[in-house]
Length: 162
Image (cartoon, rainbow, N blue to C red):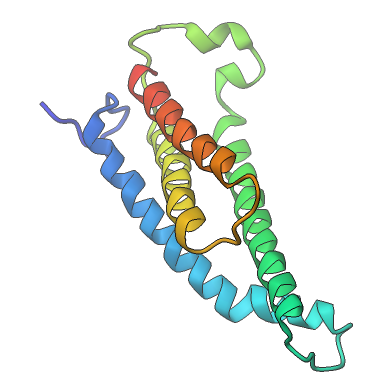
């Protein structure tokens, strides 16, 4: 029987990964709007020292794109770090590592932690698509692609096995 991720302390289930897909789609929308309305404009303003409009040659456009990409990653990771600290701070295993495996393999997984798993999985699913279509191609493309795929697999395995 499938358990809903919204149930209190639901057992992990493969169908919960549909939530990760929704997170991935949400990241696409968030990145698009943040790029269009904040990051790109801020990158142009920073590049022009705040007072002169830029001539947008190809090199400048590439710098603006890289800067916007870096701002997106900074915003994402700063937000996620804040939320994970808020989620885990009051957990017994936050300060006592002996608590990590207490009750394994039938540990209860709180909704906040389940959603965090799905958020992270969704981000790396989004990252695979972004790497293929959106982000600047770099020399380490194959390494980054394998990193994202392996990370999705590891997050999924960790979630299912708790």
